[in-house]
Image (cartoon, rainbow, N blue to C red; front, side, top):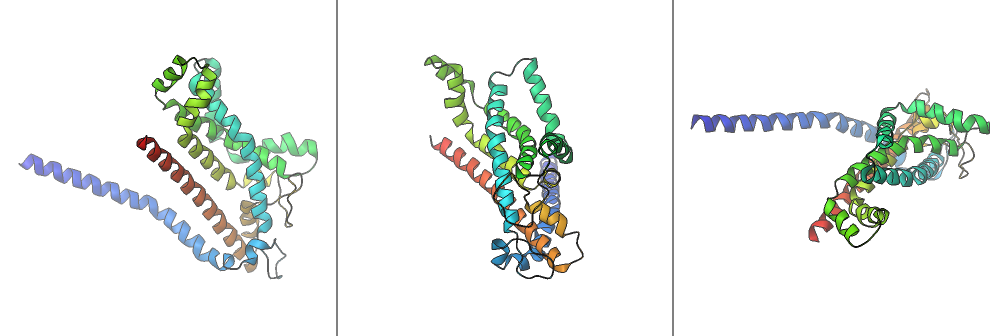
Length: 284
């Protein structure tokens, strides 16, 4: 009897410690969200904040339309470049990657995942900006694509690797070539994990400052041409927050809130996709 009581006490104590550390881990996130929302809501409460571009200090009506458009264009181009290549590379590593070449690709992906983003920005600066002799959204997309690529590769490899071998064997037994089995059977089955990894890579790229600082440089005017200077939300936060002017600091807080909400929506969307696909798989 005493042994059972001690086990119950140990279980209750372990659960309490687990809950306590969970709350402790959530405190920094809660403080960041609360502080950003409390300081950014006065800026985003006006519609002109989303419709107007940045204006010099002292001139009312400034907004971050140029930064929102720049973020969408730069991250969109980077996604179009990185996600298809990353997905195909991840499928190759999971389905065919058993040799030395695959080991080198995995090592390179792991190194790139942990590489400082400022180093990737310098690389894109030397690769694209210097030959073109000007900053541009294209060069920023190159930097963010390099940043996103290893994340997509490793998450895709992990998602495809979890698919049971029975599905592969059934496709091969029907006479399908292996590449069709990988693309038409394995990839749709691994879609929840692949989509989640791609969305997480997009969220990470949207919040990066250093690669964009060395490539897009920033632009206070609204432009949709990726071959010109472009601004992003992280650049607005970085530059306006360092100024001594209250209106620009308020603009920085508003841009930070928009960026946090954007990243939060992307993460919630990835979780929704994953749960929906799991629910559909259980129904089948």
